[in-house]
Length: 255
Image (cartoon, rainbow, N blue to C red; front, side):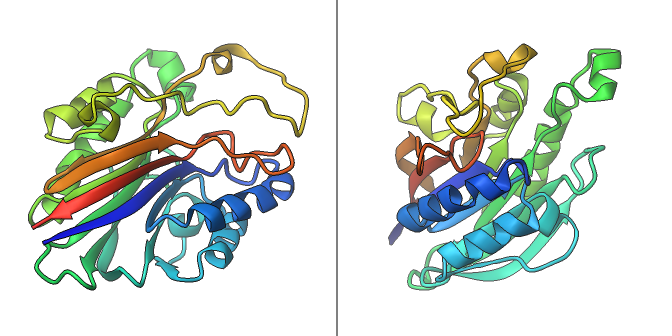
């Protein structure tokens, strides 16, 4: 028994320039219509737009971080939620942590439940890191990996991650058995940040933002096989949905 579906991860950039980006986000979501979606830097306005663009999807409805930082959407024609939760993985930022939902497959009863999660690791420019020159992201990644292995009874999970990093947090996830679709498929991942060019306002770069980076990842473990993976370029009237690019992966889960 096998089930093939799509998953998207996207940092939504909070409410920055949201009035300009609203239509672009709505159009991109309605065109792509991922079966699973994990987001970071959510705000109430972007949740409203995604709800309207994905009418066959459901998300976790809860206060706090579920509307102010992270949330998860799933196609209700394919999945049904069993339970959801939040795990503190060592953030100082308000609302941040590991958001997760456990899903069962509606039409594939023999498949084990799938845990879908999202997390946003701490920005390198945070005051403590500038003072100590020590990153909290590796410990946060280890905590996320441990939590997901405990939550997923058979170890099958997808993490939608803004790592704010390209190296050691990912190595910690790999050490715990997680893999990324691009590497599994024998490919390198195109950069996901920043989106360029930004036609909606003049380009003004400062410091590290000049460097193109891969910050956004799907990391998976268990009976999942990536079939293809893509970093999405999308503009509507020269405006992108976010300053991060969405990452979309097609997975097949096997029994």
